[in-house]
Structure formats: C-alpha cells, structure tokens
Length: 554
Image: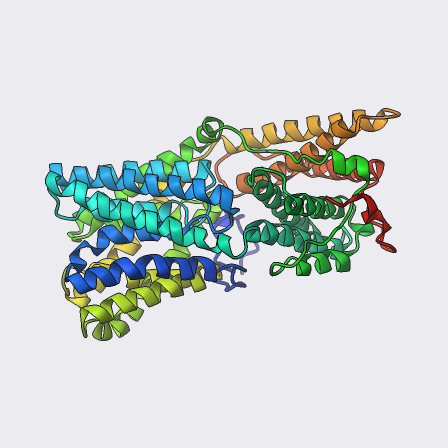
C-alpha cells in the first residue's frame, strides 16, 4: 500500500461540490403572489386567442404576460416604476429579435444576436437589482422570437400584442394595493425582525452565528430599501422604520436583544392591523432618515464586465454547438447557458446541476402530460396555466424543482402553432440542455473574474472608514445626534456590503489569495463599534417595560 499523501484538490474542484445542490428548502413566504399573478396575466389573453382560433399568436401575448412575475417584493410605489421598465425592456428585446428574424434567415447570425441580447439583459437586470426571475424570462422571450417566422410588416402588430398584455400584467401586479397598500413594506420589516431574532438566539457566538448575522443584515438592508422607495414618510412608514432600527440594534448587540419581542413584533405585522409601536428615544426618532446605499447604475455596471463576457461567450458557443448538432431550436441551448450565470463560479456550478436535473425530469413530466394536452387546444392552454402556477410554487424551494414545471410549459408553448412530435421535442430539449449547461459552464471557467479581489479591498476600505467615522463621533463628549445616526447606519451598510462581497469573491477561482483574516477582523471591530454606537444613542431595548414608547408616536 502506498503511503504517499494524496494531492490536495485544485481550487476549482473545491468550488464544485454536489452535496446540497439539490436540497429542497422552505418555500418563499409570498410564492403565491407571482403564481397567482402570472396565471391571472396569462389566462385572459390566452383564452381570448383560443376563442378566436389564433393560438399561434400566444407567444407574443405570453411575452407581456410573463412580466407579471416581477417586483412582488417591492412596495407599490416602487413596483409601478419597476414593472414599467420590465415591460419596456421586454418590448425592446422582443423588437430587436423580431426585426432580426425578419431581416435574416442565418441561424449563426440569429444566435449571435441572441447571445448579445442575453448578455445585455443579464448585466442590466443584475445592475438594477430587478430581482427574480431576473434576466431568464427576458432572454427566453427574445431568444425564442429570433427563430419565429417573421416579416417586417408583422412586427408592429406582434409588438402591440406584447405591449397590451404587458399593460394587463402591470394592472394585475398593482391590484393588491387596493386591499393591503403597505403589504410589501410590512413583510420586509417582518423578515428583518425574524432574521434579527434568529441571530439573537445564537447569542452572537453560537453555532451558525456568522451565517445568521449575515442573513440578518441582508434582511435589514432589504427592509430599508423597501421603506426608502415608498416616497412620503407616512405614519405607517415611520412606525415600520422604528421596527427596522430595533432589528439593527439586535444585530449589533445580540446578547442584549429580546428575541421573543422581535418575533412578536414580526407576527403583529401580518394582515392589516396596526403597526406595533416599538418606540425610540426622541432624539433618535427625530433623526431617523435611513441610508440609501444604492449607487448609480453606471457604477454598478463596471464590475459586471466579466459576467457580461461570460454570458455573451457562453450563450453564443452553446447556440453554435446546438446548430452543429443539427438541433432545430438552438435558442434552448442559448437560454440554458444564460440561466446559469450567477455571482461566482461556485453558484454557477450549482445552477448548472439544478438546471440539467430539473429539465430532464421536466421532459419526463411532459411525456406524461402530452397525451392530455393533445386532447384539444383548450387542454393545451389549461396545462400551460397549471405549469406556470406550479413553477412559482416550487422554484423558491429549489431551482431544479421549478424547472420541472418550466420545462413542460416551454415545450407546450411551442405547440400553440400546431402539435408536434413529442419524441423529437423531448430529444432536442435534453440535448440542448446538456449542451447549453456544459458549454455555458466551460465559458464561465474560461472567463475569470480577476476583479473580485479588488472589490474585497474596496469593501474593506469602506468598512474601515465607516468604523473610524463612528469611533470619532463616539469619542466626542456631545456628538450631533443626526451625525451619530448617519454614522451607525453607514457602518451597518458597509459591513453588510463587505460580507456580501467577500462571499461572492470566495466562490471564484484562479485569483490571488483573499484577505480573509482582514475581513474577519474588520467585521469584529465594526460590530463592536456598532454596539457601542447603539448604546450611546440609547437604542438598546428595555426588556422589562414599554415606557420607551412614550415618545414614539408618529
């Protein structure tokens, strides 16, 4: 027996685990909102086309209806604007695709156009933080349209159909504001309180405390972004702001937080009842403005250059490989590649595995459902509606589960213009999935992100400066209340950005060693300063009484 010491795994091998990739998690708290919205957005146009005998136009109405999947975590004031941009982005990609399809029949040219569109859609969706489902739906719409028979004279009419259903999707997504106008902000605040309670339960040192703290700060930042996008500071918003501050303080001083009270506040935010009055000292309440951590769009586009190159190269090569294999729908391989690219190589690998497994299982589901769907066009439409609902029900539990429903839905959509050979459709889908995942991942490995380390250094510098600013104010005998509040919020934002940046960089490969020790030290000192700042402001919660609420009335 050899006594040689085994060679350590390569950096790339260490980043590509299989354990846990297919693990099923808990569903999203609001999974039913996009699920019901997309069904409500698809059904009326689809049934209208069914009655008119023009299901061949369903691809264009679906383009607009699928916009109903977006922005369900945004307050309604912000959601209105985000959905407008989503619809306009969908129409822009669709217009480019339809014009290209009408001007050339070269599959190579069309794949190239699709790859460039996919890269632009990926970078813009990430930079604007539009949220799930991100670029995948937009890329699916534009890529599929590239290979739809088209003439220039037909383009305006098809775009009009997409625009009309996009407007309908906007109305569907905005309708709940009539019943629960502050619902998204209340949910975001409740999520922050629950995450802070989970961290407080670890005492700041228990098992999993680092992960719980990172999740807590991410939830708090999401809550601030929701509150800051609601416009005027109404009575409800001011009450929610105070609760978010309580969550922040619990994260800064977990040993002095009351996890039970945090959970009770979170539970009280369900429904439409009054918002709990958490209360703050008057000085802190008067200066409670929050911090808008959002940077300009152009500043967020620059660091995503490697991601844009990965997406364009991977999608193009996947489409070319599909063409070389003689597959009639190369856009399936293109969309598969576009769906893989995440913040780093490790997450991209996980998504590749999930995509392949989900699509293969989805093809088997299609084989079982195809006989039922072929009973008539009405059955075809109803099956598509069922799968669109199922996709949103499952995708938040794990991406591969959602793909089990998305795959048969995509296959059924291709049959709106006429039934096709199920065996041929299934074979092409599996081949394109494997080709797209393999080629797309190879492109991600080939295009390294050497800027990840630079971003960690910048985040470290920002965190150090924010901590020094807070420390200087703490050293003063009577610091300005507004400056102290701004310093506390700025330090919390900087620490959250540092953790997110370090996690993203840790999932990359072929880069210089990351300053992990400096990151840990910066986080430790930063959180100690946060706790000291909260004490100086008098923000640490009083477990015994609620007398602190006296000055908290909005």
